[in-house]
Image 1 (cartoon, helix red, strand yellow):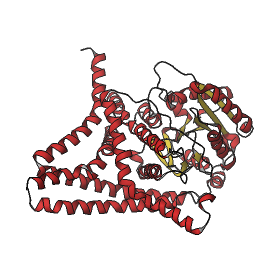
Image 2: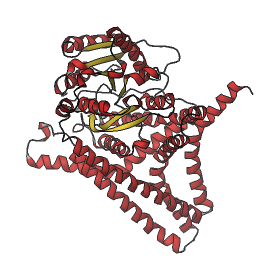
Image 3: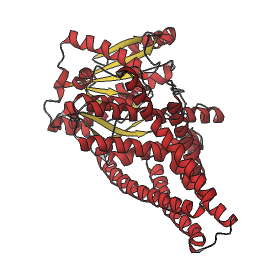
Image 4: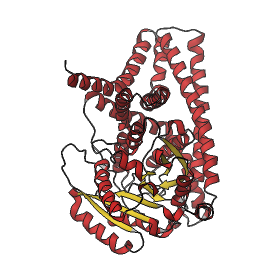
Length: 506
């Protein structure tokens, strides 16, 4: 077998491994329940203990990140920047906004936020509106309106159109951004701007940044000892249409918010997700975004990490950006969209073979860093797929078969009580998250705020909705994760699914 085929089969083995571990776990759990229930009970107890310890660990970091967030939003970062960094006018911000057929109202809302609500000098901002060739007519119409409305506000609005049907590309945000990056580079070179003094932010088209986002980002960048070897990850809220959204999409979206919040307090395992920022110099060094994958938002970190031999990391930003939930007006259609969105995010499992492959080839990356990121990725996608099903559903199988086979002893009698206590402990974390989710809500729209009784009802529903969290963990956590990992295991690669975005009027 020549090296080409050996490399192919090795990479395919790495793609198969995550899904194989998941399915082996389920199969072994069922076999133990059928043929050795006592061993199955021990396995479930150990797994549940691990899961609860993991939840406790995450809850501690969630609270740490929460207090840092509450402290950060109290500071007027625009005033702080001007007072403490006299060189801030030397820096430019470039913001990439990839689109894929979104209506003018959605694009306009994002531009309006950047132009009118952002506390920063907009003449130091370059905005790149990037469209897809398959929506060329609609995009050109939107881009023309945007340019006429906002051209005099920003340093420059660049319009990029990504041609459709380029061989070797995956239709999606990564290939669109790849094209937009080259358009931006051409303009920056023409303007003779200093690469090292340009800060890049990549936003989804519905991203509404905190008013102090760019001032805070500038402070972090300027004060960092090596700003060209770091990405900056803000908190991700899904609040743009949260009051209009249904109960399921709200719970799933907020779950994502708090999952990311726990990682913000653990920079050693943090990678970029969704909207984030970085150095233009680093972006040029790696040749922009990878154009043949689905999860370009997190892959961009790995590209930099490998390019700089492990000398690259992600710093947390304790200021949020807000995006839409997947709600588009129809409950069942929104649930379908929610599943597709979670499956696309779960497709981040494609990073596992990429990391192992490139880490093995790059001998300069410190071994401990390699193992940390490989473990975090492996453990993360594994528990994402297995934990809710094992803890909430399959964990009862060994007990059922033990009782059916009259295998009654102290262990079988006490295991239900132990599992019940573990679940109660886990509910403490859900209670804390439910309280936090109410505190961070944006102001209630007037139509829900007609009188005090209705206001109390709406806030109560926002708290009580977390009762369905165990169900959403399975339907929109485990199942799409299993779906994604199984698809990769079978070589049925997932294309990029564009989240539908709709302007909701308050």
